Length: 136
Image (tube, rainbow, N blue to C red; front, side, top):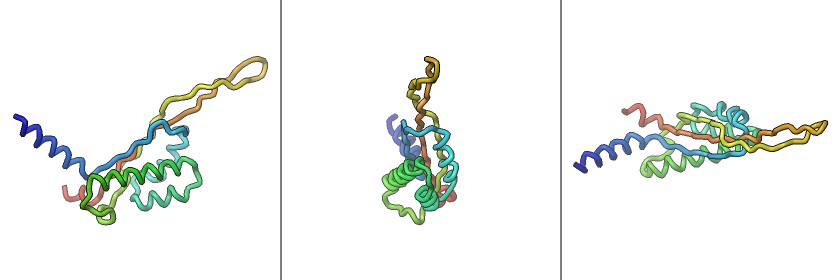
């Protein structure tokens, strides 16, 4: 009875072996600004994506660069025997969702107050490898 469960778990683990992901939660940048940077690297090769992020002027690119490097490290932890060059890692999915909002009040003329919404975001990066997906 227990062996079938273990076989299924091993099959799921094997199918997920060629993808790795990393998440960045509650990043204090507005989602709109982060999406501008995320759109630059969506679907790109990892080496090219890291170069694009390194030389981008935007502050959000520094955080995304760290996140992509973290996802690469996670992929390496899953596939210790494989080397990164032959795997041809690419950014399979990159998703920017809005996080919690800090609400602040800014004084306005005539005794009024305007609400300021300090936005944050959650970013998820999923890496895939080209050589593994073609063999399946």
